[in-house]
Image (tube, rainbow, N blue to C red; front, side, top):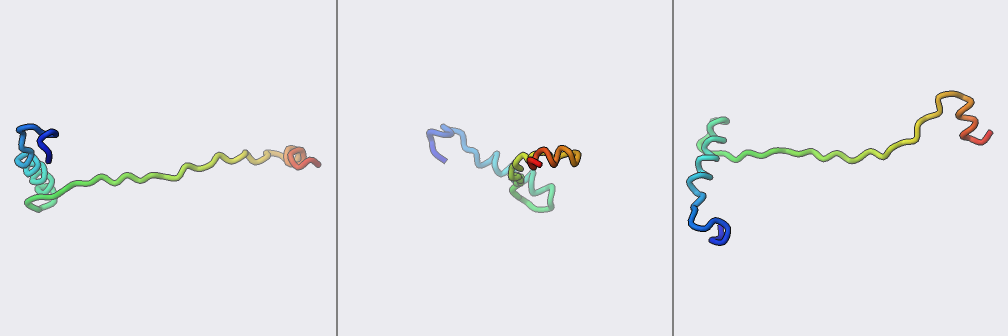
Length: 62
């Protein structure tokens, strides 16, 4: 903690309250909570498959 960030306010009491609230939910005096964020790889757009044999032959150049 740096004075330029918080001034005269001491966050210790409030942080202890937060950790006590989290701990109470799981049966401990204090706990930290986390959120898991799952990032998924972007799927590349695929060209649509031809719907008919005629379209398939046209795409193949037959």
